Amino acid sequence: MNSRPSRLLTGLVCALALVGVAATAGCTDESGGSEERITLGYGAFPGWLPWKVTEEQGIFEENGVNVELKYFESITDGNNAMASGALDANNQTLNDTLSLLSGGAKPHKIVTISDTSTGADQLIARPGIGSLNDLKGKKIAVEEGIISHYWLALVLEEADLTFDDVQLELLTTDAGTAAFVNGQVDAVVNYPPFTTTALEREGARAISTTAEFPNACSDHLAVSDELIKNRPDDVQALVNSWFDTLDWINDNKQAANEILAEQAGVPAEDYDSYAAGLSMSTLQQNIDAFTPGTTPKNLNFQADDISDFLTDTGLAERRPETEGLIVDTFVKAAAAER
Image (cartoon, rainbow, N blue to C red; front, side, top):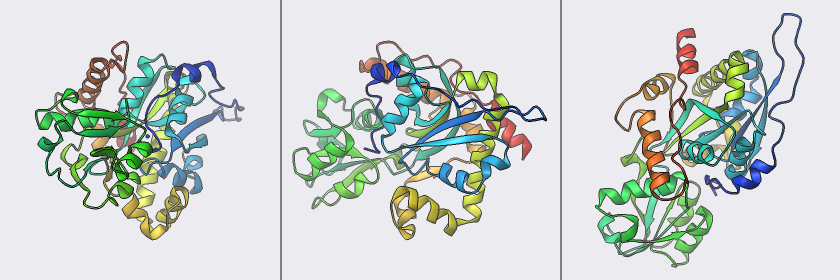
């Protein structure tokens, strides 16, 4: 959900050179339970902000897990921290996860789906462009390598177009939005809050959104292989805390909006609009998506499709490995406990 702040993997080589401590070691209590800390990264994106609610409402403590939240204004910085091993867990897109792993990141796996974009990501065009077919030969701004880039390929395919049929302007999402507003490009792919800015251009409108591709852009909780192997109970507690948080938000809408809005930097009364176009994934939706299958509803299908995209476009030197990437153990256990 990356700019947003950019969901692009950048500077991975530099990040890997700056390997940090993945967790702060703690002590063991008299009952034998671990008090080791989990460092969890999240960023300036509505689908991940509920972790702030988790922290403020003491939900981590209720589930017996010691978590230190690391907030990143730049989602790229969070991705790079996960790649280097400086985080135990991070919130990131499927596209980012595959990019990171293909670039040599510390091994990690997906344990939940936090949300899917169901209209938040948009292709916004200038006046005179009324349909996807009108994009042929036009300049489209998009951020290279992020989920927006992948989604644009799907959109163009709907009109029997490819990247060769348009003029791609590979710009960060904020720069691409500015170029669109200033009339330097004909269309732009972006997401909140940049969609609001782009639509301020007179006559601009969205000619495609992820509402038409409801499974293409999803966000996830990724956890290091080391944490899964050595502290599976803590990973389970982390997953349980996420779904407990979603329950709390549903039961305490106004109080939740105040917490979320403060972290997002928007008025509480505007938060629902800020987060519009995103669908938070329920526990059952997680289980359904984690079930292997051959449609866009199945996460393994999406992973393979994005891996092909990254390889075909040269964004990954080698095809990202998807075998074993998706771990359904924890969402299934969470469902069984409920």
